[in-house]
Image (cartoon, rainbow, N blue to C red; front, side, top):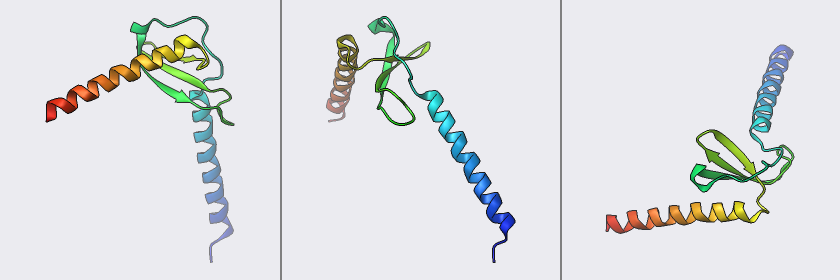
Length: 101
């Protein structure tokens, strides 16, 4: 039979782990959009954030040498930048595929 102390310890550890992961994820979320516009040369990549309970807005997160910048996906310049990155990656992938043949 499992003792009450062991059950309480396991519940306490699970609570601590879940709380730590939740707060870490929330800190990584975009909570507001940047103002202004990034130059294309500053953007090294991007990721997508969807609107969830933990992350209150949908955003494109541009990765730059200086860190991250949260942009509004409804803006034309943001989606144009995403398209440029995708097209560049697709060309690199096609080029490397042709070399392997």
